Image 1 (cartoon, one colour):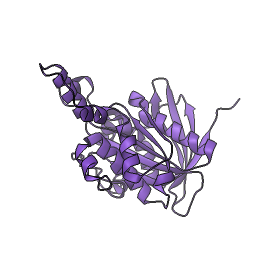
Image 2 (tube, rainbow, N blue to C red):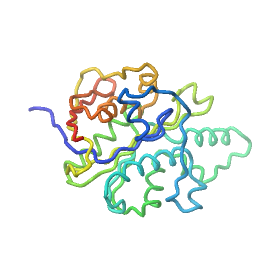
Image 3 (cartoon, helix red, strand yellow):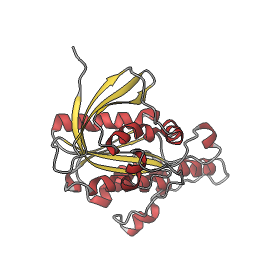
Image 4 (cartoon, one colour):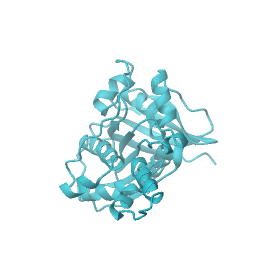
Length: 268
């Protein structure tokens, strides 16, 4: 039996990472039209959240919502009925650090707000508040394979249910001493809005399957270091194809002995 392949159209893209502030600025860099200059990731304020929730959010939630809103802005899709998949390689690094410090102190009482903001599915809850979203939302964590796992989950929903699905994959760096054990370089997030229909502004049609072929590296050394250092940045070879409006096949990392093959048919 041939392997199962799943298909969807990418109708919106969001991105935030070191030297890649958003998709419009990153696209010419990934396409090789401008040099890449690394710089710390800047996380915007999420104006869609009420002030009280906005004050409580950590950097991971701000990152996830920022890239998700970028992708949504490209397509005329009602966010209140949009299914979502949030994928992260871990929880909020800074808040986990603060919780560990508290547990190691004499005063071991942890704020409930700090705890519920630290977990990997916090962004899904804040998205529902910000967008008044009532549709199904899945949150998953697959360590270094989180982007591919999230894409597989999102595109499976598109194929089975025939509805648009928004994928957001993201993580933020840990402070020391956790950074020594999990050395993520900086905050990085990517969002893809997938639709079973192409629409007028679709970037590309993608078909996803699993393979044991080697993953495609980035041609520029700093971007390759980012790709291998940040789990969500495993998406960079796919984003490079999209930035270049390039049709063809790209292989990205997933599990230790299994990768993901993505056939890209450019629509622009």
